[in-house]
Image 1: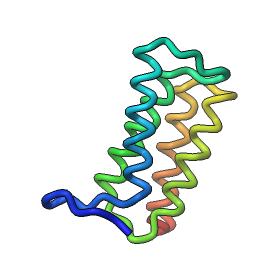
Image 2: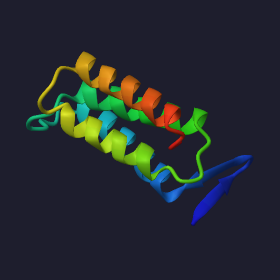
Image 3: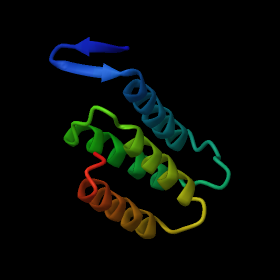
Image 4: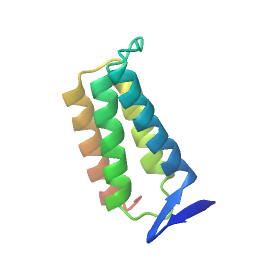
Amino acid sequence: MGYYLGQFYIDKRDLFILLVVVLLLLGNYLDYPLPYFDYQNLIIITLLFLLAKGFLLTTYDSALFATFLTALILTLFFPLLQVLYFLALSFIFLRLFKVI
């Protein structure tokens, strides 16, 4: 179930991601401590997720969503540049194998 906002169709998952971005920005602005995570890394990953959802028109975006959840978990263990490499390679392989 989704919502139409003019020309745009917003799914429930997209509303959740928009809410997460707003909460991350608010937490960063208020200097609320978020253990084990860096706000800037999380904001970059979620904004990349929103851009990818906007540019990649997929009917079944479960693989895309799982890839970004994996990237969020990887930010616990790896630097941001390595996580961005993972995202780039996973996009290439998902497109190569025609998953998305």
